[in-house]
Image 1 (cartoon, rainbow over the protein chains, first blue to last red):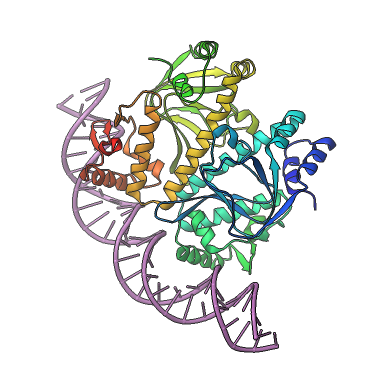
Image 2: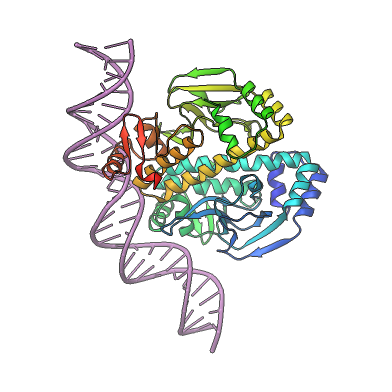
Length: 220
Length: 220
DNA sequence: CGAGCAGTTGAGAGATGTCAAATACAGTGG
DNA sequence: CCACTGTATTTGACATCTCTCAACTGCTCG
């Protein structure tokens, strides 16, 4: 399977063979990380960027009262902290939600890529802008939609994002996260998320078989 | 009063006199905009960036059911859409919440500034990263805090941001927006926001006199 | 003075949270 | 292969937060 990051970029940018080779060379050192581990913690000043190759990770914050708020998903092909250097330290943590394969690319390598490969440079600036747009969408979702639509929206977004890297069929994918993760994402209680999922299942809007999620209507 | 944008940047970057002059020259053409007008609409491909000099504006989206979700405030010194060009079209609208003084800087001017003034270039990439961090903070706020803390958080954030541009005292500022605006920000009903504000007033956490907001504890 | 918008109040409905327990499931060691 | 353990999911009952609707007040501006 091709590198999901390359696959994602190629949907939008015309990569040269040299671009591709440079990216592949930069992502040779894959690390396995079990679920529930932090890749980066709030306050860190990371000296490399992470590229998710397999599995789900997330950006999150822990509140004083102990509850967790997930503010973004990182799925295969997503890169994190490209530009933290400009901001200083991390304002949030990044942790795995499922077992992940992760590539850590040293900062110098990133700088090398942005300097010598103009298309990659553009791509590296583009990605966080997409992240930001997603963040806005989540904010709308959380603020102004009832729980059922909100959860449905998240599930659909994941479908589209996984399709972009070839990890979903036309209407289904593997969702390797728990209902608790989902509830920390939606800002709902896990109990309520459970009931919403049952409701969605009851309406035939989603079909789940273990960790496999199917969204029949999505093809319509 | 100095340009609030310059003031904001100088808190973090060492601007040369040339930097300052370039910014001032770029911001001569001020436009007055009444409250409730769109500066940019969703779907636009703007050919200039806006710089807010006075007043409050916001990024927002309208949902199919007609409700509005405010996903960011733009206060004096804030710049919008620096990098939309990379993303394509706007995924949201920008509108005024109060009467505003706005500077529209043509894209070529921006490119000129980023090319010829390295410090400004860095600053222009820094600003949207701060916006993104704020967005994450809002998401946490909305997802995992009860209504009273949520509203309090918003009010405190505005204090800090206005202080950064010299538009607030140590614990007070003018808040030129309505309770409806606040509720579209917090994802609450206007009625509930009203009650929360009364509650905060009752506890002495905020003191309002017309549009003037004082947060006594903030000095503590 | 009147119109219109912002703010306020009350009552009742509905959505979501909390708590506590029961069930299903997956991985582990015997 | 099976019991065992810990986690994930599900269920029920109840509390509470927040919303909706509708009316009323007060302020600002023409």
